[in-house]
Image (tube, rainbow, N blue to C red; front, side, top):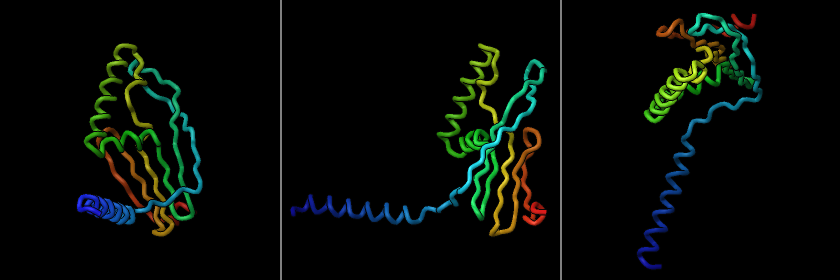
Length: 151
């Protein structure tokens, strides 16, 4: 084998080793065994000061040790703020949505969250943790023993 081919083979073997090691280091998240989707009806106040019937979609993912209750739409919008490219996409969606809303009068084009609550249960820690917000800027969380929720 000539030197160029040998270098290419060594480089490829090294890359496979690096990718294999990094793949093994990835954190495994618990997989849901049960998925339940909820429709949560509510009244939504719009700019014309009238209340309209609306509906939030909430999702429960659970297995024997963990559960997560949340709005997939809210989680998606929240996750966009975690990277620069996500922030740019959110800004673009917001700008296009506001422009379309002004043109049509339909504010459903503007990206908006379906609530702000996330509820996590951990049987291993025997805790329930709730993340929520009050108003536009107040965000917080609290944890309490799982026994309080069970009864």
